Structures are given as C-alpha cells and as structure tokens.
Length: 229
Image (tube, rainbow, N blue to C red; front, side, top):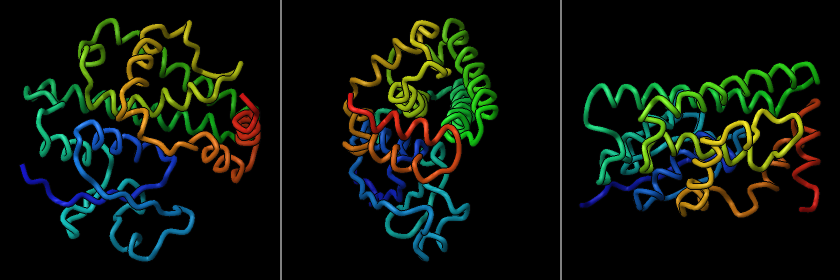
C-alpha cells in the first residue's frame, strides 16, 4: 500500500502530539517530524494551522489536518489493520471516550500548572474525580477494557505517562486507588510505540517547560523532576 507523505508538526512535550506519534509508530507509518516552539511559532505555521495549535499533519506537502483525534482516525484509516471499530455505534463510543480523555488531559495540565496552592488543590480534586470515573467505567465498558491496543489507548497513554513521572503525595494518581488503570499502564508502557513516543530526555524537557511557568505547581514539579532518581 502506497502511503502519502506524512509530515507531523509537533511540540516535543505536548500530550496531544504524543497521541499522534504513538499512532503513527504503532501503525508503522513512515512520517517526517518537525518540532516548533509554540511560544514563538514560525510564520508558515501560523498560516497553515487554523487553530494555531499542534499537532498539525501535512499530507503530501499540501493538505493540512488538525486536531489529534482527527489525525489519528485518518492515520488509522490508511494503515491496516484498523484500530477503529467498524460498527457506527462502537465508533461513536470510541470517539466519546477519546473526548473524555481530552478533558482529563486538560485536568492534568491544570494540576501541573496551577499558580496557587488553592488552585492546585482544586485541580487535583478535579483530576482525581476524572480518574475515579475512568477506573469505574473500566469494569463496565468493553470499549475501555478491550484487550488489544486501541485509539483510546493512544489517548490514555500520554496522561498515565505524566502521572507516572510526577509521583507526588498530592497527586490525583495513586496506583493502589486505580488498579485497572495501573494495570493498563503497565501494559502500555512496554509497547515500543508508547515508549518511543517522547524524546529520551522527556523528563528534563518537561521540567524546563514547567520552570518557565509561574506559580506554585510548576516550581514544585520542576524541582521534583530535576531531583536525582
């Protein structure tokens, strides 16, 4: 099967970009990767990105796709075997859980970047409630608990990777509290497409990013990531 030329525009530590990198690598689709500085993006990116966000996928040097969920569905559609189910209802359920995980990605980000201790506690509570709902639904929803890798997993992995890095007494994430999610992460972290979806110095880059933010949580986590293991 002849694939189009795929050029992914990325910011190195963005979890939404990571979803598409995971999908591309898992589907073994050749792609070109370009990193940009989102704080100072090049003019060509401003012109080609309708929302000014990453990821951006340029197909055959011309057509632009944006939004990670859309990009991932396109990648899946052109690279068999498909990860998206064929039944319309199951497709809708998959998309619904991907949207839910997008909200959990933002909840995690708000926790990581909270500017005050009060905001940190509120964000921690919100993120924990989201994880609790996810853990509960994994006992009931076969879309979440399916044994094989899915587009849902490509969305979940970046969240769990960051929680695993940011071990903290005040973390929303506790492996004992979320045994099903913890078991899923144990599986996902061993998949080469997940393991190789971030730079080798990902923790250091994440610490640098947080260090550039102001407030309570970023300073706390940057120091934690900088600490020797």
